[in-house]
Each structure stands twice: as structure tokens, then as C-alpha cells.
Length: 438
Image (cartoon, rainbow, N blue to C red; front, side, top):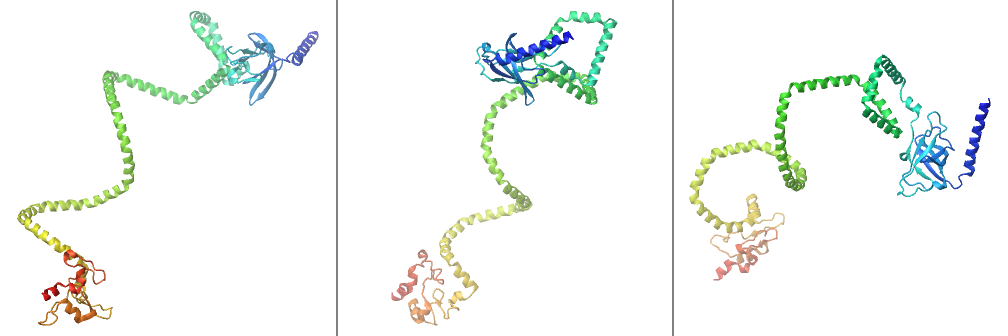
């Protein structure tokens, strides 16, 4: 009981000292907030140290979005801290939580100072791995397997294996150093260690689930290697020829590299035409279909023409001497055709109905005599001029000599070069009258 009472008095004294430091010892202190993944058994009043020296205390611990935000009160004499400062939670001892503290590593002196109230994010803090967390990463089966390994190790050492282990340790200091370095690296980054343990567990479980497929893969790999060993001579010959093949390929690629520039320019030039050709594709397809239908007829025509070629050749040889005379006749016929062509409607009307000959207008109520088709002899033995015929028939006669085309429709088309000019409508300018007067 006295020992228990003394412990209670010591705890009360420590609490009073912490309260007094909180109330009266940090009026000029500065604040720094550090964000840790978790802060187990970190409480207000614990020390903040810099290079092993106390520089402040923990003011409060709050949970924000699943992370622990620890407010640190830094003494005036140790402020300011520089940018690049890091914070690490330290155990203080391996037997309890009471001696925990926050260890600061100062940033480079060349960096600017931190502002009062600055935040150290999780990338600038280190959270240690708790011992119970290390053991909780193993499930019940894994813990049982680990216990079996330890038991097997104990039995091995009991049966004379200790001497062999001492030999390994004596001969392998390099391996031990490497293992120590690995352990130090893992301890320096607890977050990476936890990730490694979780990933290892997940990987082991995945391998265990895929063990049949893995066995099959190993068997197939063994078969593949055996097949390669069987054909090793052919492979060796292939490898012997491979350097020359690679050199040829390198030369080909060099020539191809020189051709890529013109080829790129050609592709650029063809790009607009390709777009236009895509638009013309339906018409080309229709034309191709039509050609497919016409092709048999064309072939038959060519065959007929080939059979008739000798006769045509003989005809051309016989007609060649007459070609100059035909050309001369056609040259003389051209002016006549020029003057006859405009009379096409009148010629058609005369061929289809005789009203074109007489010029009788059945819808007008009276006849009309067209002098271009009326013979100059109106009675046997009597020859009248056009002016006399006009006087004889009066207004019923429309005079024209020679008659211009289109006169029946009231839109005469004069052809002075053919003798059917404007004078053809004036009886006083009739050539027959001048001939009679002479």
C-alpha cells in the first residue's frame, strides 16, 4: 500500500507540472501541426525534441478524416524552424507508452522559415509500426505456421544444428550486414513496411488460389525447354544466320528511312484526291455495274467487226478514188443546205397537210394564197407578174417573192444571203417586174 500511494503521489506531481507548463510556460511559444497516419498513446504534455533536446510539447491530438493531427507548441528560443522539417513519433522505450515523444529533424538552413501554425503533411511525418500491428498482420493459420517454423528450428538446433548455424553466421557477415541494412530501410518507412506485409499476404493468397494453374504452367514450361533442347542444332544454325539477317534488315531500314520523306509528301498530295474519290465511289460503282452488263455486247460487237474488217477494208480501197469528187460536191451543197434548213417547218407542214401548199386558213374565214407556191401562170397562155397577181386578188394575197421562212406565223426570218431579204415583201421590188419592164 505505501508503494501504491507513493506512485499515486508521483503521478499527481507529474500532472501538476504538466498543467503548470501548459498554463504558464508557453506564452511565447509557436504552433506547428503535424499530420500522422495514427498517433496511438500520444497525449498532450508529451515532449517535442530536436536533436535529443526538448524544444516544446504536445498541445493536443485530433482525428481529422481518419488521420491524427498533432498540435505542437515550440519554444520561442527554438523558433523558427525551416522548410523541410520532418516529424517522427518515437517510443522512448519498448516496454510502455509513457515515454513517447515527437522527434523533429530540422530543415536545411538555406530554406525559408516556416510560418507560425504551419502544417507538416503525411509526406513529412513518420508513424512507427506498433508491435501489436506487426503481429496482427498474420492470420490464425499464418501464426500457426510461424509457430511450427520456430518449433522446427528449435528441434533442428537441439539435434546439432547449432554448430552449422554458427558456421553460417561466421562465414556470412556480408549477408548479415545486408540483412541489417534491409531491416533498417524497412524500419525507416513503417508505411512502406505495412504495405509490403499486406502485399505479401495478398500475393501469397493469390498464388495459393492459382496453385493448380501454376503447376500446369510449370509443366508446359518444362515441355517447352525440352523441345528447345531437342532442336538446339537448328536454333544454333538460325543464330549463326541471324547477324547477316540483321545487317540486311539494317540496310533495308536505312534505305526506307531515306524514302519516308518523299512517301510522306506523296501521301499528303493524295489525301485531298482520296477524299474526292470517296465521294465519287457511288458513281464509279454504278459505272462498273453498267460496264459489266455492256461488256458481253461489246465483245460480240468487236467479234463482228473483226469478221467484217476485210469487207470494210475493200470498200474503203474502192471508195478512196471518189473521195475528192464527193468532197467537192459536199462543198457546193453546203450553201444550199444553209438556205434550205430554215424552211424545215414549212416543208414539214406541206408534207403533212396540203394547207401548207395553198396557204388556206380554215379558221380565219377566208383563203390566203402564198405566192411562193402559186405558179406564175394562172390561166393557160397567160403569164402574170407578182404585182399583177397582187392587184388581181387584193388583200387576200400576202405577197412574198421569194418567201422568207416563218412568214405564215407573222415572224419572218430574213436570209439576205439566200435572196429572201426584206425586199421580198415589197411587190414593187419584184425581180419579175423589172424583167417585164425591161
